[in-house]
Image (cartoon, rainbow, N blue to C red):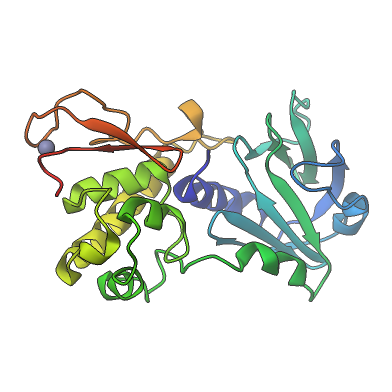
Length: 272
Ligand SMILES: [Zn+2]
């Protein structure tokens, strides 16, 4: 599943190809992904100049002079720039011709979304943002903020982070990695973590996400951003997916547990 760093790298990779360019043709090949696609989308977006691409959590918002298109990549979606005349491939659901290039939305499992908002009315986007916590790169996000919103909760810290109601973008891999870096047990109750350790955790979250975005940026290729295996950047995991392998710090085998349907990896010695 594309996580926040993948979505941010997608955004950065699209900017030079889209900003200030005009959509001169749009082909929608699928009536419905996770939600129905506006049947008038190709008409509505044709002739529009793209003015901005922003991101809120894992939603990309492509603003144009004729309205805005919100894109969510779901489980397997990709937004890719290809040469204009490149043939469509299996699971391509939408193609937007922009100058010499085409912007292609491809999604084998179709859990993604393309949602159009008419000009000056983005109220249809709001239900998607209602429960979202702040952005990790928001200047307001720091150890104090994290402590303030988490220390009254009895829930285990890892599923609390994953829920995204305090801060968005800390997906399964990044939560496991950030908790390892901060030396915090994923199953520790959020109210039993000191303010000082929340400081370390906030820093670890930011470092982990920044590192992934940098790495993703460096794997960018012409026309196609590097969605490598499973759509994840190949960050060098300290604990994620390393069950039974020795911890890089203490050599004790990494453990795996289930927390609310998700696998959590941690070092029973380095994390407490
Ligand atoms: Zn260890």
